[in-house]
Image 1 (cartoon, helix red, strand yellow):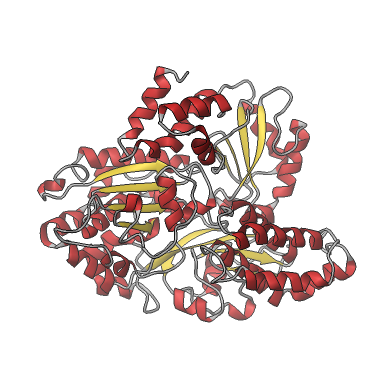
Image 2 (image 1 turned 30 degrees about the vertical axis):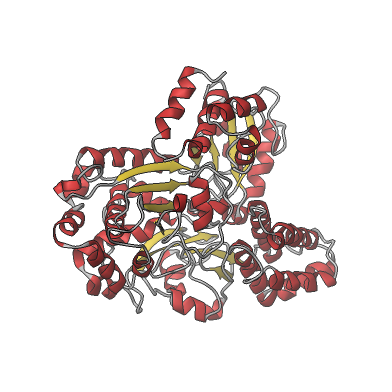
Length: 158
Length: 424
């Protein structure tokens, strides 16, 4: 069941659009903010609320890179793998993260703290390589400083 | 040298508040336009200024606006959208404007909306720009509170609602018609044109989509006039341009310079040239989907017509520099993998051809390439080129590839011959 809080947040965005279904992308983001990811159950609940079919809503949910249809850890690390970051040392950053977290791209660390996901260009190419953790952008990332960055997030809730 | 777009952008990164923006002359253009100019006169002024769209295609902005049906029988609501999706790899110019001076964008949008008599405006912002999202929300609220938005703006009788839409992320959303589908809450696949959005766009109503930097120019054109705007440029195309440089240069960054500044001046004087110990090999001048330029092109002027004459495109005007320690095959593989992943899958050449291209490049990079792969890649640059696909994504993806095959052919062949990447 969608909580009253979730429904209220979705409804407060609805008046931006002339048709109810147009709010579905925003609604998926609202669910993700509350539940961390978008499960099959969430798709069904939201589809009913927006008067869409679950398939219709899922076709939208699976199209967008930032709608997570699988569970993730407390913090998502979005690592930029596009061209400028690739030139400036993306490989070193990814390898160091893999080493520190004991996980590969697309996986969650065993303590449930971090999920490392690939990301297309983050639009901060003059400070490559870059990554985002949650909503925070980290620029000019150096492999030997990554551990200190991760420490800041450990034990912190989103 | 005048830098109208970035004059309010502070080194500490904090944007001007509404009061500070007004103090610097902000919203003067809007007040004057509402008082003295008809909507058609605003469009005519933008047309006369030779402002070309700054999102990459360079279409004349005033001309685009003039396609919107006007008058009492025109369909309503009409829509105006700022494309702030900025997802072209290597591009970071709109971030500067969004974070540094959000009211400039909002004023430009209200002027554009007045010119086409739009009822609703959206800012379509990419997910990653969290700071910009907060600042835009605040600026929109300030504009409403001061009656620059909402009902009967400044007593003019003209009304406009403005909303921020934060995308859930996909490169395709930057394509004008795919963006419309995304705003309607659908998969961001492109639509066939015609009808063009100016006639039938968002929910079938007349819609104008312009890039952030394009809108930011409009208040200055209204304030200072078309002739002044043209005089800012080194060429016939009006205005300044935010140029950017990334890659292994001494000072990566973005600068507002006269449109038509040469590649050499941007790279050497502003970005400081490639880092010590490295050699310049080439540059992708305007984001991932543009063709390489070489040393022999350094004196090309960075405006739409000149870069096209040199065999590439100005695109977003943000360059990616390739030095001699960077493998051209690896770089192009990175680009093609991006395009393959971000293809929306709507049309077959793009959906099937781009992953195939990326796989061939990966094989070459890993030492498993065969001599026939060169022909296969060449074939793709033709079959995925203009005229074979639904939108410009795949043809754009082929631009860096076909120019790399032309300019760095020996590097590709060496990978295949030696069965390894010589850079590893």
